[in-house]
Amino acid sequence: MAAIAESFTLSDGYSIYAGVLARRDGAVEDVALATATLGGTDGTETASNILDALLRPDVAMVMLDGCVVSFYNWIDGEELRRRYGKPVACYVFEKPEGRVEDAVRKLFPDWQARVEALRRLGPPTPYYTKTGYKIYVRSWGIDPVDAGKAAEACMRFGKVPEPLRVAKIIAAGARQFLKKGIIKHVNGN
Image 1 (tube, rainbow, N blue to C red):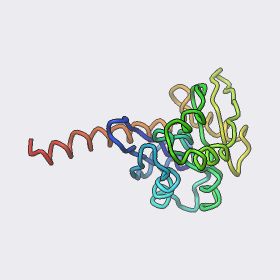
Image 2 (image 1 turned 120 degrees about the horizontal axis):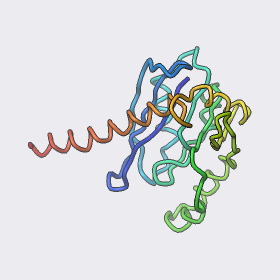
Image 3 (image 1 turned 90 degrees about the vertical axis):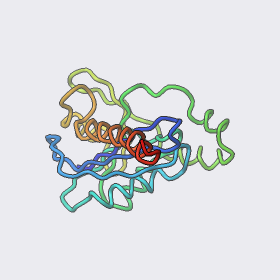
Image 4 (image 1 turned 120 degrees about the vertical axis):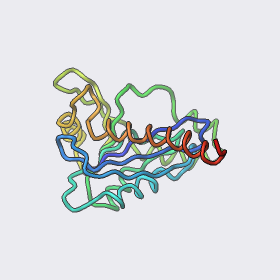
C-alpha cells in the first residue's frame, strides 16, 4: 500500500508530505517527499505527486493521514481514486474537534469554494478496532468498514497503521532537516 502523512508548523508556511510504499506488514520499500502550501488548495496535487513517484500495479490501496491537512488545505480522496484506480482511505485518530467550516469562513476569502470541497469529503465513519481503539474513516472505492479493517491489519504500535506512522516520522524528519539544514547552509553557519 501507499501511505501519505504530513508535518508542518504554521511559521514554516509549508507542509512536508511524505509517502511510503509499504507491504502489509509495514516494511517500507520506497519513500517520496513533496511540499504543500499551508492554507493552500494544492493538497490533492501534492498527494498526486507522491503517488506518481510511488504507485505500481501491485499496490492495493492508498492510505491518507487525514484529509483536511496543511492548515485547512485538503486532499480529495475521490479524485485520487479516479486518477489512480486504487481504493483510497483517509484516517483520523482523534475525535474531530471544532467546526472546520466556521474556521474556513473566517480565514479565507475563497471560503465558499473551500467549504464545498470539504463537504464533498463527506463525514467520517467511526471504526472500532478489536483492541478497543476508535478511529475515523473516510473512504472511496472501499467500504469504510473494510478500510478500517485494512488499517487495523497494519497496526503494530497503538492505533496508527504502521505505513502512516512511518510516513509521519519521515515527514517530521524531513521538515526538521529543511528547517535546520538548509537555513544553516544558506546563512553560512
